Image 1: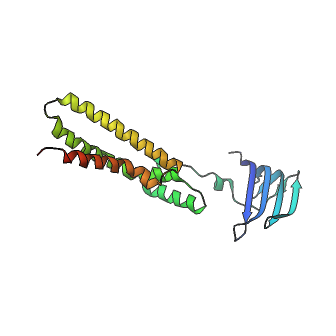
Image 2 (image 1 turned 30 degrees about the horizontal axis):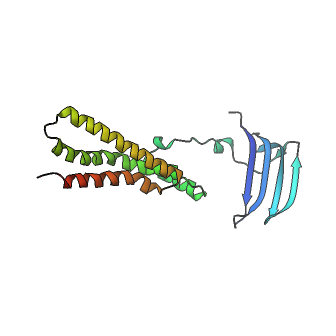
Length: 192
């Protein structure tokens, strides 16, 4: 609203991604057509060597004409985006050189979380055949415990993926695969 940027830093790179210049201003204020920089400095580099340094205490017009609206983009949280939006956003961040495993985990979660209900049903089926006459309350209690264990394992693996310890697809799908294998094992023990 104030059309003001505090502690502005601008980095300029050449075609080989080497730092070419750096600009710092304590304050940048939009005057309607350009940014006015106050109290800062500018440095130029040629390779690893600094070739010029200019300090300024008085307001200076900047060469940058991007309006304040350019910087005021709305940031949505991953849970507010649908699959396509989040995928595009991750692509943009990766193109700019950022590693975003936590967002990739959120992306794969959008597919894996609905699949968990199917996995839970597969795990519950062998118990339905085995419990027999133990009662409905026993079955409900067992299903609640199994559901909490599955969600706990899912959360644990998701955090491993967000931390970068596991690749995001592995982190998200591993709990489903583990419980699907458990379901197959339990089915093998059901008497027919």
